[in-house]
Amino acid sequence: MPLASLPKAELHLHIEGTLEPELAFELAARNGVDLPYADTEELRKAYLFEDLQSFLDLYYGLMAVLRTEDDFEQLADAYLARAAAQGVRHAEIFFDPQAHTARGVPIGTVVQGLDAALSKSVERHGVSTRLIMCFLRDQSAESAMQTLESAKPYLDRIVGVGLDSAEVGNPASKFREVYEAAGALGLRKVAHAGEEGDPSYIWEALDLLGVERVDHGLRCMEDPALVERLVRDRVPLTLCPLSNVRLRAVDVLEEHPLPRMMDAGLLCTVNSDDPAYFGGYAGDNFHAVREALAIEPERLRQLARNSFLASFLDDDEELRSRYLAEVDAFAFDD
Ligand SMILES: [Zn+2]
Image (cartoon, rainbow, N blue to C red):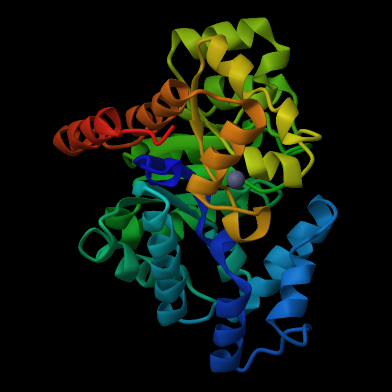
């Protein structure tokens, strides 16, 4: 079987980052939003941004086309179809309520729209799903708390909370209270840490927020005591290799620390982050690391196994076992 169809769970995926140029134009036309690009061709060129700021400008600018429940449903359904075609069997999907409420789109519109697609996903795409609500770390702690409050009517559809956006200068400590409140509501906890921020950001996410998984986390390699801690506690890391290259966390994929991280005994997973912008979906990321880092088939299988072990399928161990059996039975082409 081709590598792309290796069964896997995607654990680091921002639904807003799956907006392809064609869908952006379709939604813009439907909602009467003017995009500052002549056509999809010109927009696709803008996706070849140079740095983090030009990415964020484009990313938040394009969100203007997402207005109704139908828009969010269509966005999520399009992602799930693409993910399924690349072997994703389970997806834990991030969304950023504050990016929408700031433009006057209520959180209920976002959650209900996404849920409309997610609730049909097993039947339509053979992909089980969970939804994780992220706080924007460059916004205030008060805004995060208000967001958690506003999400209370929808918590039956949200499995956990995360923390994303600009890391440096916005350490985890700022969000200690909101994570405590989220934990008290029974929500699982993850956070982006150690992508651009130094290892102290990961320590804080672990010790102050009590996260169960670290998103990115690649800079843990600068701190042997931290690596020891992550290995000892089996804390999963959701790595996003193509994203790391596009946002310059590593210069070239050939220098990505993934093999060294696996050698160190870290529980690594491979994910796509914002695939419409970073050059590929989950299967593309597996393909890219195989090519650039010469990762052998059994290690690719281990990465796939890790993704299910690290997933929040604790409420359905039978399903997790079935997925792991699919991974074990997968036959590589070469
Ligand atoms: Zn991310």
